[in-house]
Structure formats: structure tokens, C-alpha cells
Image (tube, helix red, strand yellow):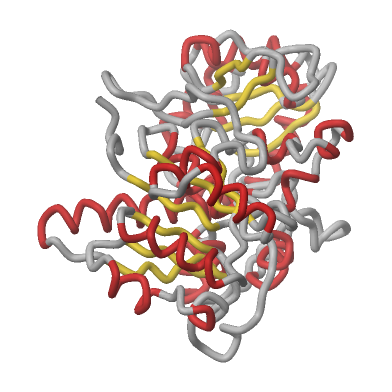
Length: 394
């Protein structure tokens, strides 16, 4: 049995953060119904590097986080569409949306409206800056929050900053936090029987990813600056080797001791972090010379064998070829579909359970693929469903 079996989720989100949150629930057993405007598909359906897939409204960004979901098209600007959504919500456990604050309330679909129909409903609102406050009405994306939060200003080198991160980590971080908030609200509901309104702001989620920097700033008043691949300690950082870059991770005193002994320089071992900071320049110069004596892979193997963290800088393609992944179950494969002539993989979850763990069992749905099934379950006849299609409701 999976954790969220028999939990019904209405996924009224788009782009990355919201759909990733519901995807994490879906791979753990939740019945997730993705609701989309019939004339305006989720924009990630039509984005990605494979153009034929985007033309089919099955872009790779969508494929990456839509497995295990069903799809219903619904025009909520139509009263009948809103009526259908209310029927679905009356039987649901979770409703997730990421529209501009107030947009759904204006249509009679806000938390107060839907919780009146279903007091046990967990209603999760993901927005840019939160439901209230002077910026509550504003919108944004991952890159906007990277800029607004100060994350870009501290990323890169003094010459290249401000710099965005290479992957949409804010979207995925927000999605993970939303999934945790929803799971927590469901657990609380099991204890007190009450539904919940979750107000999650992407700016807040971004700042949570910077927690250690924020607390340091509150204590010291210092503003984080862009330092590239450097760290306060020389034994942490990126060095060029004979054939590429290596990231050293000798963070604590035990590890730096192991490193210097392994390198044949026991006299460089420090007794405390103050000594490490004071001797950083000399340590950096020595490590720069030493690391060029072997290849990155040779150094990684040599140091890891001695319990010293180190990693060759790899491309994503190289990382995916790591045999470790085959033992983890992170990636699951779907057979060729949607016009593809080869199988494709999707990441599922970053953790394993002893039993009842995450699994992607059904492929991502096409637009409205489950319209008939869903509407039939609500009591609509075949003729009525055809009529809804003609009226532009679905």
C-alpha cells in the first residue's frame, strides 16, 4: 500500500512548481486529476526541446512531472464548468491551485467557497508573493524569484554575477515544500478532522533555500557576495586537474586532516578552523599545484577510497550514466509513445521506502484524455458529455 492511496487530488496548477507538488503525491499513490482549460493548455505542454512533442501538447517539461495523473479539460469561466469543478471538489481531499491571488475567489472557487462544500478539504494556494501583503497581487516565475530574493546576486563570480542557476531549482523546491505542506495538512486532518488552507509563496520558498545565508546576515550584517566555486576553506572548492575540474569536499577538521595526510603533507593539518582560515592562501596555492598531477577521475577514486569527499565535475549525461542510479530507482522508463521512436525516462522521487514506495505506473495524459471517464462518474450521460464539448465547457 502506498501512502496516499484513496486520496483524491484536484490539480488546478500549471508550469512547474504546482504540477511537481501534485506529481510527488501521484507517484506515492494519490489519484491526481489535472484540470486544464480546453483552449489554453498548461504552457509546459507546448515547451521543450522536442518540437514535434510540443506540437502534440506533450512537451518534455510536461512529461517530466505528469505520470500517474488523469486529465480533464474544463472551462471554469462557464457556469457549468464551475458546477462540475464543485462536484469534483465535494468528493476530493486536496485542491491545489497556483493562480493569481483572488482570481478563483472571484469565480466563487476560493477557499471559503470550496471549504463550505467540503470542510475536510485541504486547499493549497501557491502564488508568487503570498495571498496578502503589498506584493500579493504580483506574479512571477522561477527566474523572477531568483532575482527578487538575492539568490542571483550571490551566484556566479564577481565578474559574472548576477547569474541564474542552471536548473529551475526554485520551482522544484517550491513544489517539494508544497507537497510536504499538503502531506502535513492531511496528517493533521487525520487527528482533528479539519481541512486546511495552505498559503505558500514562491518568494518565501526561495528564501528558505537560503536559510543559512539569512541567519548569517542577521548576525553579522554581511551581505553574501558571489564567490563562484570558492569556499571559506581551501579544502572545499573546485580545482583544475590534469584533464578537468574536481570539487573537493574536505569540510570538517577530520576530513581536512585525512586530505593533507593522503596528499603527503601532514604538516598542513590544522587543529581548528581559525588556523584553516588564516592559512587559506597558502593551502589554495599548494592544492592548485597538487591537483594538476592526476586526472579528475584518478583523484576522485583516490580520495574517496580514503573517505575524503571529492567529485569529478560531470555533465548531466555522465551523471545519468552512473551505475549507482540503476540501484536507486530514481529514473523510471516508459515505452515509446506520443510519436516518439524510443523509450523515455522520468525522475520519480529522491527517496526509497522499504515497502509501498514511489512509482510511475501510467504515462502522462493527453489533453482531456479522461473527460468521459470523469464526467460519467459524476452522472453525465454520453449525450450530455458531447453537449458539454460542443458548448466549450470541456
